[in-house]
View (cartoon, rainbow, N blue to C red):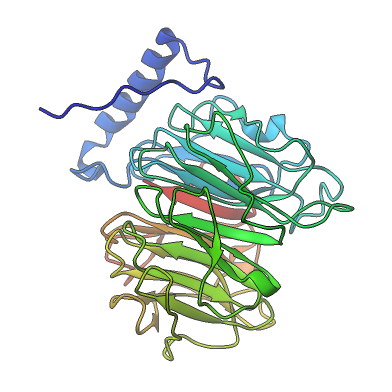
Length: 373
């Protein structure tokens, strides 16, 4: 018999027993309709995709069917341009961030952070910051207890921040040792003990080994970091450095030392990285310098060697994988004429082959991020 410690429901959650039953029934109904498509271990069942247009889609059955949440958090935001998304291992807790970066629709509007306690069906605004900010990356522990979001700052304000929560998103704080910077992305281990945040310029990659309470610089080269990912233990970390033309850097010792895999193409803009629970399988979306469209690259040896997949050449952005790497999904933004409306692709063979996913009719989204449990 497995006993789980009782959890305190976050105060931002107002889910009633009746509503909880409705959501649970909806999940069961969708799952039963496509039972054969759901993995036995439930990994990959819950999925959430977000776009720069304010679109958000959720799936309860492994990406077979997609729907909009009951409350779209974009309707609550001054700037509905989604940037990052994260979820717990069971899909119950989810985070989504918005900010005007890469968006011309809300240049002077503050971003926001939203949380869901209901598998993405209902969202609420989280009181993360007392000042306007542009929120970017988001990360969450397997249980959902530890949550971290990062920001790049706001016009007329100095730098962005690292914001952390240790109680399921109910309360947030700024670690004193993190420092102000243009923080683009963040990742954490399954337990939440190990966390990383990547920034522009001198701070580079910072690491926390105490659940986000204190932070210190790592041995990684300084530079402009855009993407970062970490395995479940915190041992394996892969990051992308450089905007106008960069490269990948990896660590296999909890961020102490870093190396450069020579088989990963240099001069590329790496948009997003995903890593399996044990670190063996890794995936990255990348564009050649100066191009809108690119490819998906994969590694099956802990980030040591990389190769291009058979995915079509598109404007690839966010990518996410299940714990074992057998299911990988990636989203595209508005790109070339073949993919002018943005799309979602899936691989069920560790990134070897890819197929486009059918989304609801009428969805024309500039997709940014995706998370799967």
